[in-house]
Image (cartoon, rainbow, N blue to C red):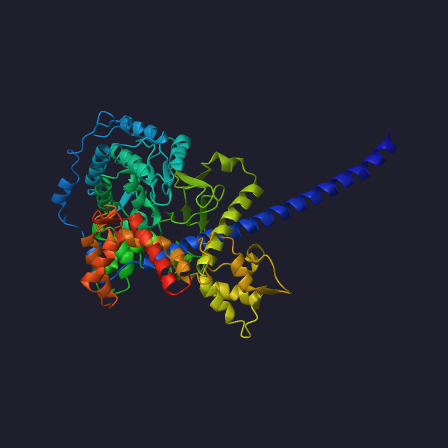
Length: 611
């Protein structure tokens, strides 16, 4: 017996050592995956914020603003009442979607959700009715909603949804539907990027109409008709409602301007979409005429004259909608996004202390776990759109908060596919998507990259060091990424530690235009500005009809030529517009607009003798 025990002890020690080795290996394996995941995250986020900067750069200024963003013919609230009228829109017998009755009821919103779950479309008459009722209700709300959580209730706070209906429905399934016993705050960015932004708005507006004291909607930076031009909501509405889309967009523009800017729970917790700055004063915010301030215009004009009271009010709203926290002390302009500021923990302490608050809940930033604390746990970011960048890229989350005002974060994944992926599969899939997006960015800047590389290659050898490759790439893309860490994924071959940059440019894994030419700089420029071309189309299309009339084309180009100090004749503008009108119906649609630019690229290449 004793001899047997003696033999088993070495076996046990070996087993323990083996277990420790396996544990150490697994920890290292998970750590490496986490490094890859964080690097991937930085790629996605840097590209996203660079896109927001580009959007801000294409905003027109000066007199062009008053033309493009004019209030149309409607200026007075009494006239808006007529504009919201739905009675002339008939519902045909062939319509098989939900039929709604007003005042809105819980049963009506339930029908609405069930219809959207089965991909049915609500008739335009009911859309207009919901929008009209929502506008009338929002006009009576303050800039800052003050909410009380009694002993029998918990309030739920949701972050960005970005048109992802599946996330909203999952939240309701897990947490319960809004009611007088289950109040909700939805903290902005309901629209853009996802495919079901309008459906999300209609559901939220429906619950707001049924429970106006228990459902609260804050405005986000994407509740802005100019941002919607770039990020998909405008296109979504016009695609779903061809005949009434223009009117629906105009009404939503008005509704967005009336959304409250913040909420305060039990005088202790501030809920706002973006954040604060060192000048944030909630007493001033509460007195701003919020419906007169449109974020798109404000971002382009905010630095022009801080002496003007309107501009000061605009700055307050921009800070609330666009700002992000940073670990360093202080408050600096948010040049990554192009609007708002970065604020530090000292600013959090000062602003919360000045208003006798204990916690700031905000959204605006996608987080891998769906939420994140910072600034000594006095700032909590909540983001409710799961799989935001790619399937498996991030979880969504929402907050439950009771009378103790302690936030409890609940996470989820809306996609079954993402729940079935292993950690390695999830990181790998997201990493491949991020690298592809990054290679597209490299491709569209390849001419600038070659020029930057050549500065480190005075002898024109076509070779530069890895350090110079990273420095030049960072100087061109300005994404703030760890390029030397990313080099193995982006540069497949090196020659004694040197990069053959001309060969590397050719090997970028992206589908180039199917045109055998030696000089593709024009096509490269077209590819780089493709998304901006669509934005420009939507800007010229001032009435959001989906078509550019010759008059709209003429007026916009006359103002643009004046703004750019260009000489362009009326005949030249007319000839250009007529040449774009391929089907000769007297207007230019988006396909004609894009095709015209494509053809002009080919013609210019031919003229240069390239093809």
